Length: 169
Image (cartoon, rainbow, N blue to C red):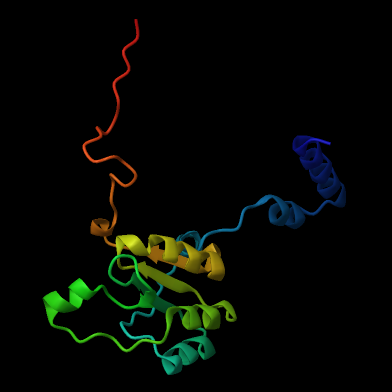
């Protein structure tokens, strides 16, 4: 049986039940966290912190707030952690933040239902950011980063042009 045929059967079954709610629930895709915020048309305040402690995370979960996770990796793509890159601290002279381990925070958040702002702080942290979003669920996450953390030439050989000209005879 084809997917299209299955879809038609399910649609006919739902119509036979006469439930528009069932149709809406069955055929609508889950909204992302950003889409939910936009659809609500209400102002929203999201929690921001540089230091995620067990106490602060526990409070956010108990009070059903949001949590901000600054995802970074050590030099050369090393161990992932919560915080800013070393370069940030060297340039600003700010002391390193005393956050809890990243995966411990993610596990605690996964057991809750609060939204998370996942702030990718380094280009090499994108794979980790993706893992965090996958574990928490994209419907609960708002991913943030500065454009400077994106590399538009990622995957290209050095010197490779942005496009290759194709000559047609």
